[in-house]
Length: 145
Image 1 (cartoon, rainbow, N blue to C red):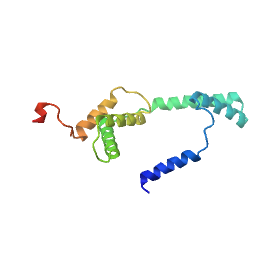
Image 2 (image 1 turned 180 degrees about the horizontal axis):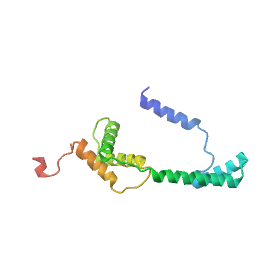
Image 3 (image 1 turned 135 degrees about the vertical axis):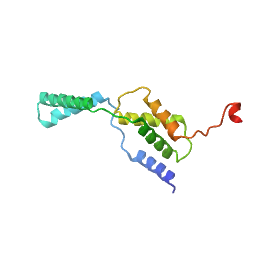
Image 4 (image 1 turned 135 degrees about the horizontal axis):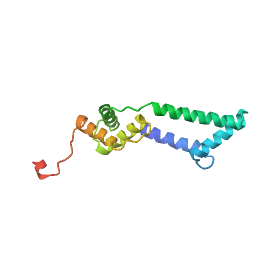
């Protein structure tokens, strides 16, 4: 059995043997409220202590995020993006959209969700100029010559 067929059979088996979901998906806010209620119920610690610990943890996390500056080297990001796209396409052809999608994924990971408009285009432009070869068909008469 080929790898592809085996993977398909495994997905089918997982779907058929997995127990059904328990109700609808809940929002993050609802999950947090449920977790807080569960912590209060099971720990035996007063609710105000649990709430103050949660607020303290949130404040500490915000302070840490504020002090840690995300640093991005566009040239290194371009190398990483190009290498990933090249490997994912088995060394074959790929388009700008593939580089752009990978650049956005890379930036989301490195910048931890902080937005920097236009940075993805800079990474893609650097990747194309430094690491890619344009093998598309020319569309102008001059290019055909």
